[in-house]
Image 1: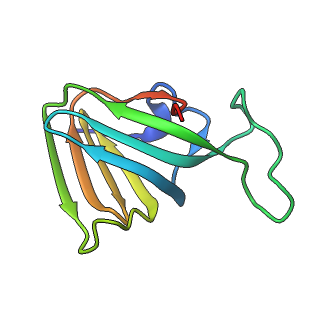
Image 2: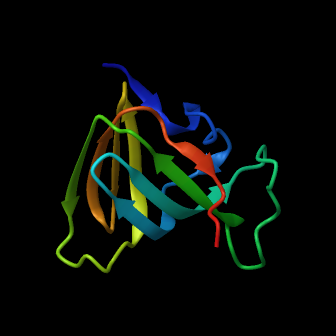
Image 3: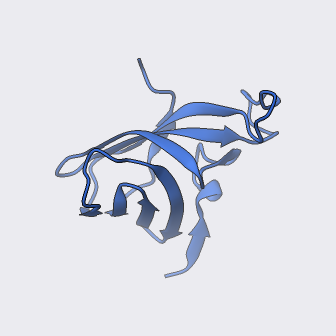
Length: 118
């Protein structure tokens, strides 16, 4: 299984996810919904210069995995803490996310990427 960088996944080409605050995480039997405040890179259509005193322009981003083959979530001790997204690794159809919420391994198709509805 060869490793792939998450920016190679559709919709994630011009975003930086490491260190992104996690606003919402919902895990069901075959679906994962994750909302993060992603850093937009220069090639992203919604890119804007970062606010004064900040290093990145961040926007809410929805990642929605549907009809997954399997989901394993090793939660942290405090289920109310989502924290930051520290890592997003891709190997074939397996995606591993690590952050304040714990470790989440999703097997299936890449997520649908879009803007969250308020």
